[in-house]
Image 1 (cartoon, one colour):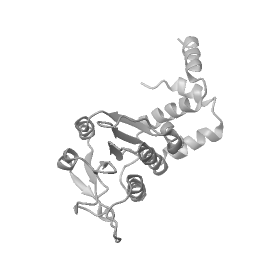
Image 2 (tube, rainbow, N blue to C red):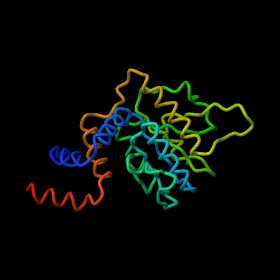
Image 3 (cartoon, rainbow, N blue to C red):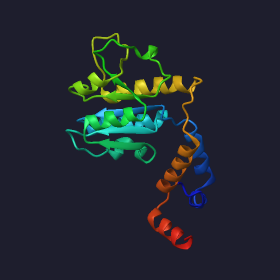
Image 4 (cartoon, helix red, strand yellow):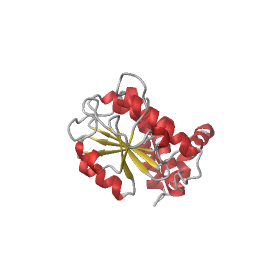
Length: 219
């Protein structure tokens, strides 16, 4: 249960411009689509994917670190880690099970499948978009458990794009189409309040001291 009084207390510390900015950004946030990256070797690519999620309104990024334990490159992410929810998994199976249990279709993004071109992809159902490693692409487990696959149409000699470029193209295309649709893609009221609280806490220096003082005075 979110403490609304505490949220109001924190928001009173923020400037009016900051609070208005939060509300405007949240209007375009969605969990209708979520993104998952599998064992990306170059950590700056994961950070760049996170940045694309933030810029185009995807609220959640799932990171599978089964082989390469890495931390987010904060310089590349450019602060996006403050505004995007990160779910870390140490196994492919755990990530797939979690997303499917939450009602997401598993969509493998790959240049080697002919299932669906980007412009023809059905955006009506909640989907988890999976991106694979730079060297090997997606694992067999993800390919086998995927409900569908998605590819970017390409007309040159090169058969694939860098993962961060592919993710940016796909995320931008799908979220733009989503916002123009009649699909109920927005965050719920509870999710909006939850994000307002989290973002307010992320924006205030020495938040732990302020939080401790607030609750000691409001028991």
